Image (cartoon, rainbow, N blue to C red; front, side, top):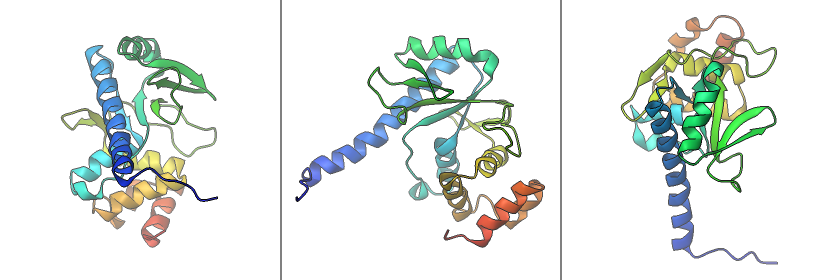
Length: 197
């Protein structure tokens, strides 16, 4: 069976729409949180993209969700703020997330990450606080050193890719290993030793 693909114009439009949906989701979420006075920091792929863009916009990698670091004590305020602009709250596999609409997929949502907590038991470091962040104009993003720590802590395939993106544009280098004692420094060294994966 031969698979039929949409025409090239339709494919290009889908690519543009996918990026635009994430940008819209990010702007809507941070606008609602800022308007409600909730302290937050963007983390995950969008935070990496924001830092990479400060050096080389052509090296920015797209992501499909929006990860937001908040304090668990602010969950009720976060929920009110995000629901007020149309997001739909769901608890999925112990994750608190906000969908664009009832039929949206969890992979295309605002995901909450909690400050000061371990994402999984036994991880080498808890998440930083939201105050460990910088204002990049359009939104607050986790400071680079703390973002790298989160990526080294989780250390999944996508986290290693994000670390390589930061290395590739010169934001982190060999000198950074001293900032992360123990296993985190070892993990960073392993990425520096294998820049191509």
